[in-house]
Image: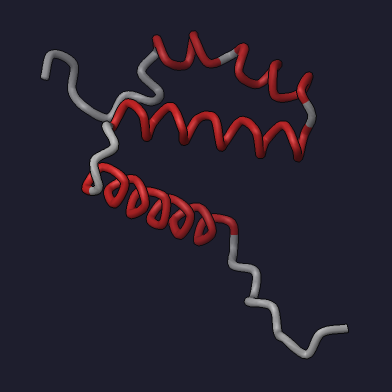
Length: 84
């Protein structure tokens, strides 16, 4: 057993805020170093899906993403007002 202490597990809402903040900082850093936002976005989706598949399996993730078209069309992921 290691003498190193593990960081405490944060409440889920704090984990989400932390994860999003760190990912957005990495995103901004990649863009600042010359990667296009489109490439960063594609890479982020790829990384997320590969981790989700490792955790939940291909079929579960496939079922989850099958709902994405309707959610996208309903504006669930839209942050900017339309037409801007």
